[in-house]
Amino acid sequence: MINRIFFAVVGLIVMVYVYKKVSKNKIAEKESLFWMLGAIGVFILSIIPNTIQIIARLLGIEYAPSMLFMIGIIFCLILIFRLTVCIFSLQQQVKELGQRNAIMQKTLEEIQKVEKRLS
Image (cartoon, rainbow, N blue to C red; front, side, top):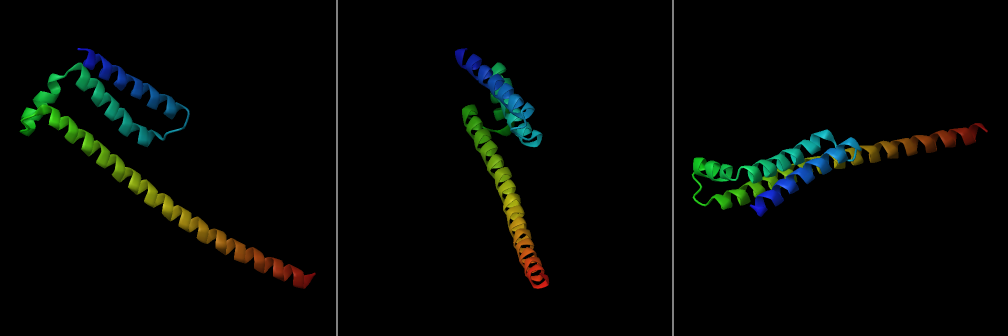
């Protein structure tokens, strides 16, 4: 019983924490949805613990707690994939900005050379 209360409180705390971070523009709404779903899942599973056993039976999993590990691993893999996509996108942006910066520097140097000749 105390475990259920503990995990229900943890789920609520995570939901409130994510909500506050979103309201202060520290986390994007798109990213917060993933964490909110996870926190809601923890909250629901702590309130209705039989849900784990029912889902495990439907999936053909004999030992219900092993399903929690599977869900946790899938959650982590999805998170890692999403972060990998974000990192790739940011790397592309940094590369493009670096190239633009180099072009602008070269253009500025050429303009300064032309100015010196005209002076």
